[in-house]
Image 1 (tube, rainbow, N blue to C red):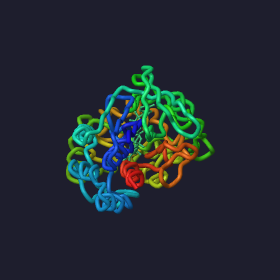
Image 2 (spheres, helix red, strand yellow):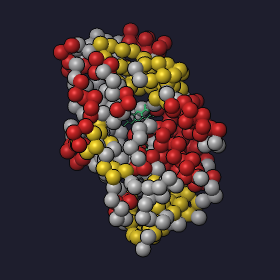
Image 3 (cartoon, rainbow, N blue to C red):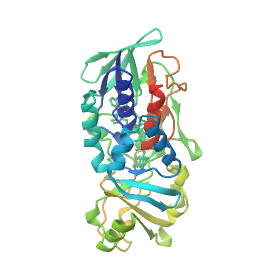
Image 4 (cartoon, rainbow, N blue to C red):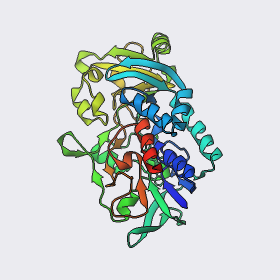
Length: 342
Ligand SMILES: Cc1cc2nc3c(=O)[nH]c(=O)nc-3n(C[C@H](O)[C@H](O)[C@H](O)COP(=O)(O)OP(=O)(O)OC[C@H]3O[C@@H](n4cnc5c(N)ncnc54)[C@H](O)[C@@H]3O)c2cc1C
């Protein structure tokens, strides 16, 4: 069986391995030049219920990516607001390891390949079309294009394109292929009925922090710096993707985590205000580049599906990751691979 996967984020990579293990010839198409999509930022693993999920994946024979992330964990079993026994992994090291693993496993990967349309014959997808006009046929298709973008949506439902890791201006925007096949997307909404939600963290380069903060991060993994009273903004919490972590501590403090780059646990924070805080006088953002103003808007769409991850109404199309439901993480994206395998 030939299986084509569209979207090389965590979910697409996980689906690729599962399909390969099930004996398929697997072809993965990714619109950018990197695997892992928004998984190139983040890095909090094994916190709360994700610990159980990670162990379950390992015990069910699907622990490859858990092992890769465990191998680049910098801090283990740390606690901070809303997060118990978290592992902080160096996301800047993940992509090359995952890429090598997929290639060694015999997955065919094509980069800079953006799917733009589908041809459907009765209830089956016949082929997928790409921006360069090429066409690919397969027996089954798995859509793992995430729930982010386009840039227009980041502007309409966020604070504008904040120049995030997805790099839409360079590689073109996400396309909902299930919707191209005539299946109506489910729209995610945040407080007030506004579509989508704003990603919940930014990244700073280590070099811009004071030595004192860096030492603290090296030893403890996490640092809390109180936000000056006049700068506390509770309203931002309601806009954030990760509502389970939208706690007031995240508005009252700047919370920094050591995940290789330094993860700042807020959707965005004006640069001039960030620089008022002791030790952050030289701060700047590296993801998204305009983190002082905004962040990527996610949860815009999911696909209606059954519990075999089959897109409702299409016999040979499946989905995984954020495209298959409004959940939030690296681990969750990979858990669904086990269901695909089943
Ligand atoms: C700032 C930030 C911080 C985060 N922090 C954490 C964290 O600490 N811990 C955690 O567990 N989770 C975190 N997450 C969430 C986690 O990264 C995501 O939930 C998960 O990686 C989603 O994976 P996915 O494969 O479903 O989607 P995506 O990563 O969005 O992948 C979709 C892929 O599809 C590609 N694509 C889209 N359209 C097309 C097309 N038409 N043709 C070809 N390719 C296409 C995209 O380029 C992308 O590579 C964070 C997310 C963000 C944005």
